[in-house]
Length: 260
Length: 276
Image (cartoon, rainbow over the protein chains, first blue to last red):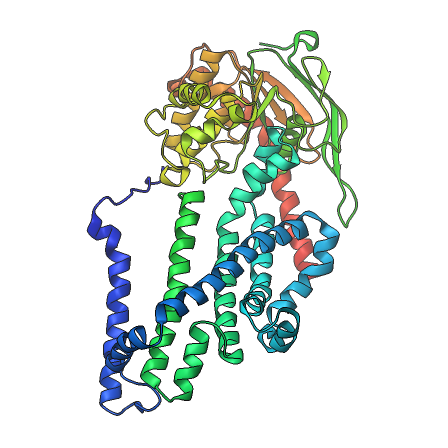
């Protein structure tokens, strides 16, 4: 009999991964600081992390970072909600109908490689120079991974679990709700995570390109002023948006499926 | 305990299953007929490839493309039937549900109120010896414990017939023996009609009233052996002389079939190598 898994109750053991992550990032930043100050890396291309840290404080005070952060995060949230609802629904639909799947799966995969961001003039014509253009580009670019991972999650559900459902005479809807969907949830979440990354990259990219909105516009402004420390500091806030969404998603996943 | 067809709770009559393959149709099971009496423990034993699992799927209603009939209490079944509870060979607990919620699953399906189903699930969890583990997830349990959760989940649906497909195949020998004791104890306590598919002779003799021995492909009924050992039984019976005689007798029947299966597999492997 294999040994049962034991949950660690000691805070130190539980915090181990977080602490290791922080220490690793700290070491990386220290290494960057040393190599830049030793002139091994040109500081006019990569500023030392200490200058970026000062830049963070400066852009918080001078560049309305809170408002910009919330704007980019809000756009990302709306695009994220749209991909979660419509992307998962599209994946379920394509999985459900074999003909539809065979007809569209390759196209969806091809769409994942399309540089949607370059179609921004078209989106501006349709939606105008406002947040909806940015959100829609993020949404369209982020759909394929969510659709593909939803299909994968549903079709790789272990046959024995489906057979258990059949043995209890489950209806099609019950089979989906009680077995297929919960079994596919971890893979669907991988798709939503990938989708959010695609969405955030595209959202910041379009903000940068059309010089409108939140953090992307700020990066454009600071880069044009050749304020490298400020530019990297603004990029730090983009990373922060990503981290915030990952933490929230992880919480939602744990709530929906507490343990694997 | 021999089952007469008219008093049987389960009757399998002339079941034949053919599968289409690129080389033509393969007959997996041919003209299999038998009956199981209420409260009886019948094991179906045979070498690998004799169609045991195919028969499991036919009786459980998961495979319907067969000739012949399967009747439960006289009613011909044409799909999964609420009177038949299935326990699968593969690990089949729902990893996203706690032990309690796994076992309460069939009760949830019939709309039983939450409080009542939790209470009912506790009874079956205790029956398989997992009291205290209600709030654990399957990922926190060992293989043997997870298989007991599957058994409790099936028992919770209170099936007239418990149909098990090599439920202990993935477990080590000691766990297998102890779980065998547990199944016997439950079967005797509930007077549960049980049909066990297995390739393990010891397991079959330890538990059964009768053993149906199948031939290698196509799977036919070679012989049905009555096991006249005293009940209640547990794994201590393994040391008895009568037990040893039954094991030897069934191995005699099986040896020829198992050798035929082995030769057939070797010849397939050689053909495959020659054509590669």
